[in-house]
Length: 187
Image 1 (spheres, helix red, strand yellow):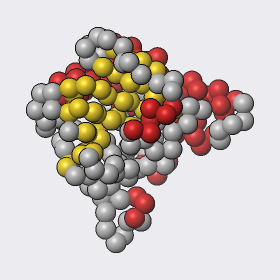
Image 2 (image 1 turned 90 degrees about the vertical axis):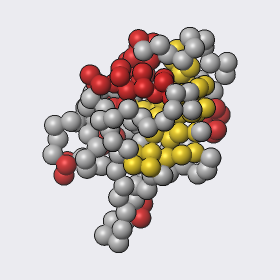
Image 3 (image 1 turned 120 degrees about the vertical axis):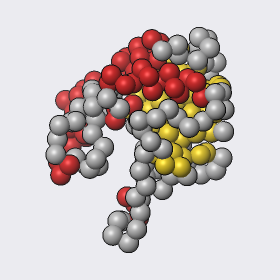
Image 4 (image 1 turned 135 degrees about the vertical axis):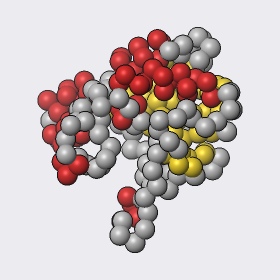
């Protein structure tokens, strides 16, 4: 199984199985804002998959939406279900600050990358989906390493073509490949 965790509005085509904690669609919601996972999961429960049942797991802009104190348990649960490789993509606040300072990214991008767990819903680009901590590549790699993974920054962006990555730019995002057997990913 290829698992897209937290698919949001970016449902990956087969063979990916898309999961999220909500489903939102209908005539009152613009189609580009629809969240239509294959399966809705309870965020307070372990991932509902057998041990080692997922050959690939994609976490695209997921970790920053989990309170920091729960990230290790979540990564251990992903490790439980993953049989081979995991790709994590997310906002990198340091890259975003640098890009903003150089005039490459607007203030709105920087604001959306930063922790904003206490903002009212009407101040967020995506209501109900706050960032709980300031995410960046080094912090994610450290969290991976502490939970039995070996995280490796993705330097060859062509690798991302094999994953359901949407709109990736390294100006304000990171991509990290993780394997759970302690060996660096061969790519």
